[in-house]
Image 1 (cartoon, protein in one colour):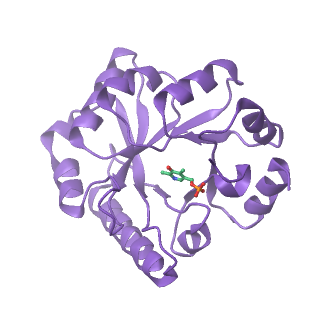
Image 2 (tube, rainbow, N blue to C red; image 1 turned 180 degrees about the vertical axis):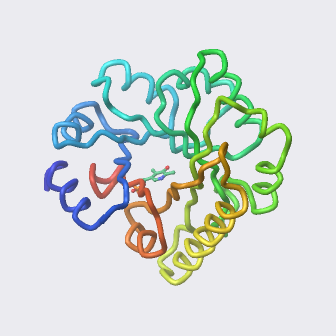
Length: 220
Ligand SMILES: *Cc1c(COP(=O)(O)O)cnc(C)c1O
């Protein structure tokens, strides 16, 4: 099937859930095929690749950073990134705030939560999340807008395990929104679900899925 065909098939099963089409490693003509089919939200996991693509592709593309982000690279995407899904430390959040301040922009972000059993996945745990949101330092960060949480389930065939992990993230999301949402903080997005598990993620309350291979084909 074509990228446009894959895209419309995926979209049919999303309901109100937002779609980020994950275009990492794919050439610009593939991104343009998605763009021409109406897709504007694209996800990348590397700063250099995202900036290279953003420079030459249409300006109304919404670029989502979904991969682990190093602090010294924040400045390159700060002016244009639409949403950073992968904020996994206070130090990174502080750096994003600092870069936002420099260019007078409030940068939208999600906090990545570690829900998988795998050690190699990044993210905050529940205690670190509460520590961050209740800290004085956070209250003074006026150039970041924390819009929600992001998480990745364990890579496994055990769908019940995946479901439990998404369920626990949704529960944490609801609890955190209830506890902290105020005039400064509005947690509303829950980014969870990829090609292999997005249907479960949507059933468990995802508001934004990040789908790559199901749209663009397998990556090398
Ligand atoms: C690559 C990636 C995706 C998309 O993965 P697919 O399995 O190709 O859909 C989603 N989220 C993150 C964080 C990724 O790195």
